[in-house]
Image (cartoon, rainbow, N blue to C red; front, side, top):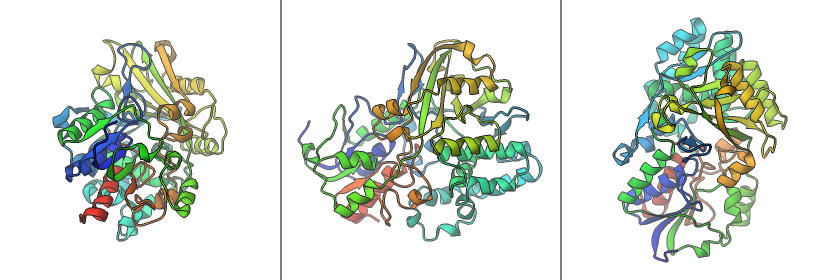
Length: 477
């Protein structure tokens, strides 16, 4: 390893590690990013997991925040190779005995689809966020304590803090409730938890504001563009280096860890205070996921045509079914009909598969660290709404929580959010404080999704951590 001196070192090259590196390098600090794997990206990797020529996103696939995030908006990534495409619709949610409900990229169309008072009530939840997204985003995608008064954001705070099950009482139509449950289930926790309405509101608003884009060539394209820009700024990257002791690092002034508390506590030489170590040990992880990818002979044959034109398809049927399944999964039970998030990138991005062939991408939530194979349950759920899907399968690839954690140690027990994002850990993430990116060591900062605002490809954890350090050490405002 190069033993030169750096102003800053970032350990981990997920979207937040890259965001921290870019922010530091743009501010004039010589920055080195170190990655343990042989490739950069964290959750932004694309690989041929099944057959040659079929490009599968290993983790994240659809990227609402990649366009909507204030940090990503500040980057000239289109100049460094990044290109997005869009499906006709961001999301469809088919049901057994009711028409499919669709989330459009136009709020008025969504309201019309939901009909009557349900449409009006849905619109009231999200329209103010859409109209003033830039203002709200600065507050929403930051620690709660960064806001002068969280609840003054009356179009968001009071609604967002409610359990999704409470907010759903505003709706009378089964289709609206089902849509709401599927959106809220992105929180990866029981929908009766406080704060689970937040993600449903945000995802709905972003659908109308900027859509749910698909990166051409795979999620890897986002990481590649960030790396290209970082290197253009003068930053350096080294891969295939696992850091087990901080004393093995090159000389540096500031250290940023794109790691969760569990990995951080394993690194030797980080002489945190006993109190801080204790708080990191108490950090909690949430449900895992069971991930599947398929090489397909043709497009997924959904019964409802709107599903064939959607970036994401939520397969969970009714509100009641989704709520019960997420609750029981959280309690450690195996579910026969899990809530499945399905994507079909090759329908809208022809670079993902050979001519006339397609890919499928899906996951369901499972108990933390579960070793159970959910392949049959996931494929049955897809077949439920797309009869004949199983006949199109050429090859499949699965990742249990164990394989996910081996692929990326930050995915503890299959938790892709870097820790459960319940109300407690939205406020204390990973610890309670006005600057939660700080550690008990004045030159060491955490920049992973275990800090606010949490999981998702938005880069804001890394951005805020870097800004915090710049304020602490260089007097940046």
